[in-house]
Length: 291
Image (tube, rainbow, N blue to C red; front, side, top):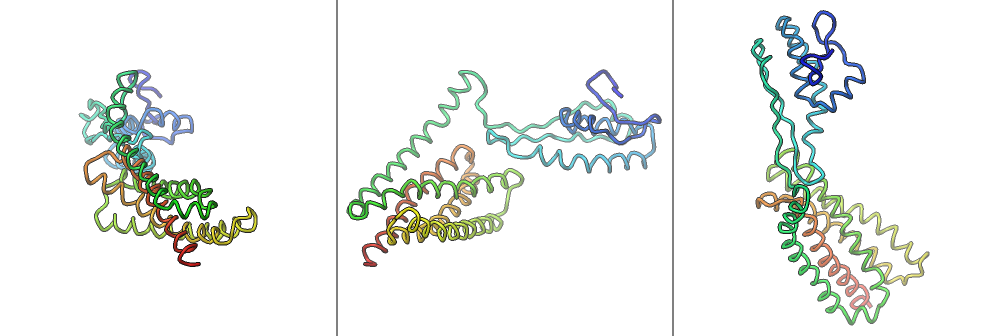
């Protein structure tokens, strides 16, 4: 049935009690939002007693749980959008209550040229800062120039090392930002999360190193020494990347900055520069001091 025009749909049976909603009604619910559904359910049982009203709210709460959880997920633009649920009294006066919706502002820059210019102003300074950080990669390469001249094969795998570090750290960043979006963790929870992510990064990269090292040597004709360097570097890089990717969202959030704008580029800058240093330091220990 449709009450008060086409904007309010109420799921009631012939006697005014809440009835099961068919699939098409549930699809309508997804488009309408949880507030309208809750309001309609309370209105539909307003004529009944407190028992009917409690039963209706109990039924409705199970259906609202999934909607409320989905509504509190981080938005694609980095902001958090939550729907507020209207408080409805058990008295008939609640029928006149207007729907209320609480939506937290997102970090989007708006539409059109003005929105694009605002985003440019907000982000360019950070990108310039991170670009300066990436220039440190050149200094790292220069400091290990003699080693790279001696073992030219090492240079072939620099993109692989940088890419793996970014991929591993990016997984940790996404997981932690999603966790922070749901609720604000305590200090002990943050430490536990960082430790868990660091251990996961080391273990998964250790597994990959055990596969990549032999594959490079037997299938790509890479020297045994360089293959050993790759197999040894990956676990260390995974440990560092995941630890960094899990720690930065907490630090940036506690500093009052926007993690969606800062954490990704900052993690990439640190992992690229320090990951390259880890790779070439392992190569020096293995190829120079080891020999």
